[in-house]
Image (cartoon, rainbow, N blue to C red; front, side):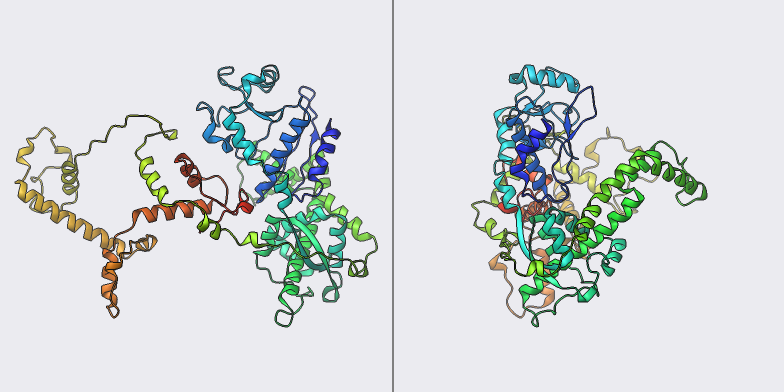
Length: 567
């Protein structure tokens, strides 16, 4: 079955470039519940994750006897996608072993069958014997399947082909293993001070230094990789044979060489880093082992760097080197290094790449578009402000905001006069004429005291209240004037209040102080800024707008990829 599944998926995945690691399945070592399992690190490319979901649904359709689970670091992300269509009882705490994919449908183990968390075996038994009980609602099915409806076509669109000029060694590696471009981009994008030292020398991929000849090749990568390469500024190492900058060289040739330089440096950094970590056999496996020692109290609370701590660390490293963990980690880390060494060991020369036809680069306008689509989209931003005003009238609880369909909401009772008196009483200046009798304190206040003795005549009270509010407002404005807070608000622009030419700066400042803040515009602007900062991922702005029944548009090419553009 393992081989059959991989064979079934091969036509869909053979040409796909994964961000960090390819989709894979492994046989479990569990005799209790045999299964296949796998993991995928998708990084900045959310398309990888949803492509995997599509593949799992495809597997469930081709192999109807299989039951499938999938989750990520956020938990049951399928439920997150269908959040507005779920039964109210389900939450992150009780969703474990409840969500499955079977026969191309989503299934949720109901709470009425298992009030507490079900075991995996019990959940599978119910799922297999009574699928009509576990099948999720049509709205849940539609929400999740709608998310993967564009695949596998979307996966093909996610691939970007670009012409680059690279050293012969890089061209040779990419000719035999195009998927290794993911390692090169990862090495470049995640570089640090230590790995930069490798790029400065380029020992592996630029053995002749500036005498090395660059060749023109076409490289396939994901759109996320292309964006990571293109948008980062990086100065070429002194030993790298970069062509002269424009106008001595045309812009296209220079851009091709610059992208190729970033790829070559990425290869050098990741190769040397993996080689060193492979020799040490450390990497992520060692870090996990070390953290487990810390949690178990192995280091006895000693300070890192102390003599006793170093002795314990040396013993731990010695034990790790002798364990099977070290061998497996070394094999995994060294695998790309060994493959690159094998490829470069075979003969290769610039003549191997000179006569080949290199297709033009794909159009990259998808990287820059977005704002025009929003302008042309039939989406009323004014509706956001109206929806928010309606939304805040509803209720909320410790579990979050609710949007009831039919609920009689009572107005909040608020005594404005009493509130102003209390506020005034705590802001009086010490020693003033309204001070309490000498010897009194807050603890002496008697609420049963006749309030008529404390009240002033109505006309004087209103006058004093007005004076207080004016003084209070002036004090607030004075305090805020020296801050940058006022610059963060958008003010109303009334054409009738526009200033004549020649007015003094002082008058302009005064007018600005008296120009009212446009609450609706600021609300919409803040929501859009928050939505944009989510970069296409779930977040508070999109969740809040979803509760209000609103959904902001995004660039189709960038939905779910961390490239939402709302400007």
